Image 1 (cartoon, rainbow, N blue to C red):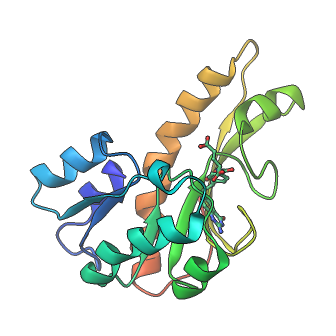
Image 2 (image 1 turned 90 degrees about the vertical axis):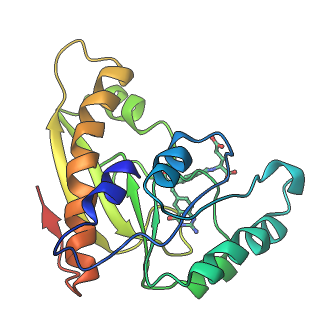
Length: 181
Ligand code: NHR
C-alpha cells in the first residue's frame, strides 16, 4: 500500500484519493494521513460474518472518494459478487504467488512443499472467483535451499513493492497487457 501511495507523484497518471482498511491500527492509515490522503477504517468484526453489511459500510467512504481504480493490498476479506461487480474491471489485487499456482492462503509454504525452484507475486484484476482474474503482471524470485516460508515471504515482498506500482502506472494509463518483471 505504502509503495503504491508513494509512487503516485509527478507524471504518474493517478493520485490516491483514499486509503481504507478493515483494521483501525493498520500502519498504512497513519502513513496516508501523514501525507494528507483521506483515510477510512471500517472494522469487519462488528458485522459478525455478515459480509454484505460490512461491505455496505466499507462502500460509503469509497463512494464519497469516487475512485476510478481500487487496489487491494493485504486486504484479507473475501469480497461478495455485489461488491466485485460494482468495480468490475477496475479493482486490482497483488497475490503472493505466481498465479494460477497457489490461489488462496499460505502460498509460500505451499510452494516450498511442492519443491518449486521459483516463486513470486502476481497483480490481477479482482473477479468473483478468488485470485482468478486477468493477470496484469508478475515478478519472480528464486527459491533457495533451506528457505523457510518467512524467508520466501520476505524475498517476494521486495518484488511486490516493485511490481504493484509498475502495474498500477500502466493500468491507470489504460495498458492492461501483462508486465513481466
Ligand atoms: N475477493 C474476491 N471476490 N476476489 C478476489 O480475487 C479477492 C477478494 C478478496 C481479497 C486478496 C486475496 C489474496 O491476495 C483478495 C482477492 C483473503 C482470502 C481469505 O480467504 C483469500 C484471498 C485473498 C485474501 N480470507 C478469509 C475470509 O474469510 C479470511 C482470512 C484471514 O483473515 O486470515 O474472508 O490472497
